[in-house]
Length: 153
Image 1 (cartoon, rainbow, N blue to C red):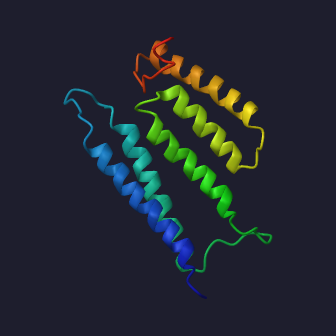
Image 2: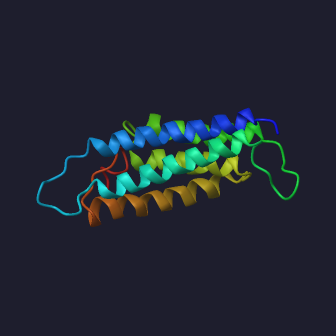
């Protein structure tokens, strides 16, 4: 049986991501009186990511992921749209705000999944972003990415 290096590398990436998540969970301040603190959920998520990473590495070392049918090759162009959408969100969120950054990200990721209707995707992304912003800002009181549109709301 041959080792599938791309699959093993993907598992290692997930495992390393889990280590970063665990580090993030470890720096969350906790109080001594609370039985269940704010770091419980991040620790659970970190543990699950680490377990998935280990299982994916083992699967890669055993020959990779096997499907029932022939899988299509990875479409690099589509993957670039999805990755570009995530990067665009990171770049735009500080200056343009949550709503614009999320709208652009939604439309780019939709393009990565095959959509070619930019006006519709931007409209849906805008609606979802406004609902998410109002939910976080007004209902939960959690301030996220204030920008151009958020100042008008």
